Length: 110
Length: 115
Image 1 (spheres, rainbow over the protein chains, first blue to last red):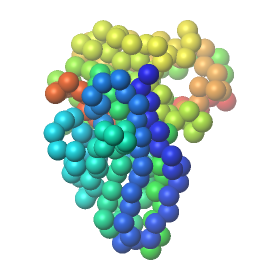
Image 2 (image 1 turned 90 degrees about the vertical axis):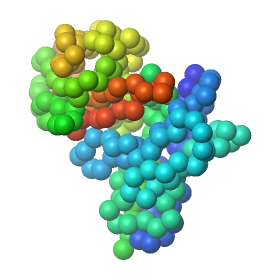
Image 3 (image 1 turned 45 degrees about the vertical axis):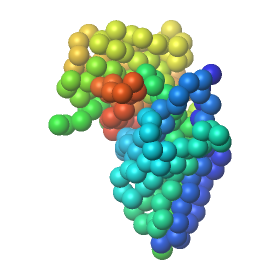
Image 4 (image 1 turned 30 degrees about the horizontal axis):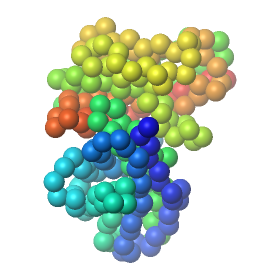
């Protein structure tokens, strides 16, 4: 069965610091992987996706993620966090239907 | 494009009442999904449609929940009768599948409170 694990429920970083959010997945075939961001009271917005090809994918707002098949991981990174990045981040896997992780809440201190 | 439009944005009702949530997907999208978000269970897929046909409703919690998509531009999620444990944010999302996978566009959600 397909599943997604986001081991970090809550992460706090200082503005300007680097960020890495972890995501591990279980999927029976070639995975389609996604990161979404949710601001308070809003729906989810796509940050980036991996379908095939280059394992390092670039997304919006300066985010990137790297697919590592050997580790079943798709971690999200950003070299320098801005206060406006404070939100909840969801990793997802699937093709026809997406299964989401439980999310990581990011808090940014000035 | 106005995006995925959901109504109502907020609904407060009493236990036992019928609740109907509505969704207008993006024009041209052929997939429509209903998700429920709670603190305890996160984002759960309830049901999804392809070309107005329900494909997988295995996530629908019980018979009190039903969903319809009478045409390509409208879907409803109905709860009858509602219970306090149904309190959650319900999201509708739509997609046009490309490269073998769906990239979902979400609506802003309908926050349901059942007293």
